[in-house]
Structure formats: C-alpha cells, structure tokens
Amino acid sequence: MYALNLPSYEAKIRKKGDGFEIFDPLRRKYLILTPEEWVRQHFVHYLISEKGYPASLIANEISLKLHSLTRRCDTVVYNRQLEPVMILEYKEPNVPVTQQVFDQVARYNSVLRVQHIVVSNGMQHYCYQLDYQDLSYKFLTEIPDYSEL
Image 1 (tube, rainbow, N blue to C red):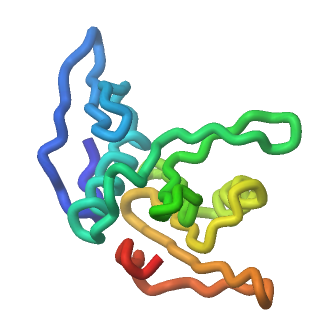
Image 2 (spheres, rainbow, N blue to C red):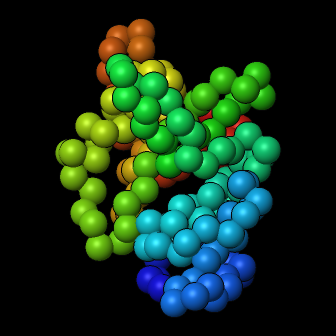
C-alpha cells in the first residue's frame, strides 16, 4: 500500500480472494483494503495513539440525512456527552484535496454543526476550527489533542 504522512502501525491485514482486507477496530470487522480505507485506518490510529482520542468516542461511516439524501461521513468524533465535535473526510493519497472536498464536508457539517473539520489524503492534512458566533473559521497548524476539543 502507500507510505503516508502519518505514523505507521501494525495493521491487521488478510488476503481474501483476489484482494486484501484491513481490520477496523472501531467497527470490529474486516473491510476491503482500498487506498481510502488505508488512510482512514492510519488516521484513526493516529488520533487514538498520538492525540489521546478515546476509541469509544470515534465512529466510522456515520450516516446522515442531507435534504432527502443519505450521506456518510468518513469519521465523526464525539465529546463525552455524545455530541459530534469533529468530522473527518479522507481521500486516497493520489487524490488532491480541493475546494470540492471542503465543500463536501461543509455540506455534512450543515447537519452536524461541529467545531472542527479535518480533511486528509494521508499525505496532506488540513484542520480548521469553526466559530459560529462570528461565522468565521481558522485553519490550525496541527490536529488538536482530544483534550483541546
């Protein structure tokens, strides 16, 4: 798979048919190993092991209703009151992070109204914090620790 701009870890990978699967500890099952899933698993591991995010407050592939359509957030982080506080959107490493990606996650946030949004293709990571009081946002230089959310 790809070398990423994230700490490596010992992912559980198994061969299945012509392809491979990777274990998602949050969903407790093996999933098809796609480049985007590779990024997701590395990023979630990074949040838990390096940034102090409780695994029990992170969920992958969360469904939400956007107008009459059902969409899925790649990852959502919750606070201890189980309110969403961060949305994470992943792309595979060879997909550039463009304005369209930010627009996509902004549409999801119109439903969840979180304070932090992260977009990553495994090589480049962008995090911004929203301020609903003055309707502004600011890009952060790094992903905040869980205690800072």
